[in-house]
Length: 245
Image (cartoon, rainbow, N blue to C red):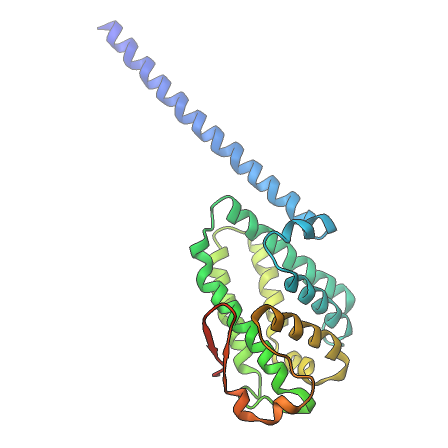
């Protein structure tokens, strides 16, 4: 009887030890993951970090980021050079965190399907809007830029759904601030029509056009024909996008 009790006690002890061991391993892995995120987030703003991110982001992303930083520095209501650097660094840090979540399988490829489609549509719409506002023309499909701003808002909702369980409230707030800066309609108006921003906006449009197999207007010619603005734009990813706002 005592032997059985001892055996039972020993078995319970082993089970308890195993559970404690598993919890310990999980805790160590969790700590390592948090440390990895912290180190990688800092590295994201360095040349080394940008090199690492090139495994996940194509060249157009870095072209657009650099242009965005310069736009903020030029825009009297954009926050200046300091804000531009903050925008770039914040986007890079968020990209690193997402990459790590992907590496650790906390986010899976299927989680990104809808998000990628939304990003594609938004970026193609930027090229369309740029083409249709050359020469001072108005974008007949989205005159007040409400359509593009809504696309950013929809992207924001999906990012919140995807990332809120995994990243801190501080980083969520930073992400929302970046998106609010991007979707401000008065800023979109300035970027599309003011000469001061033309070099950076043209660079963004050309970079995105190359990525999606589109063309970029060199003058107001493309903007003069409203029917071309409503035409279907075929992406090089074998799906179609209709510029309907």
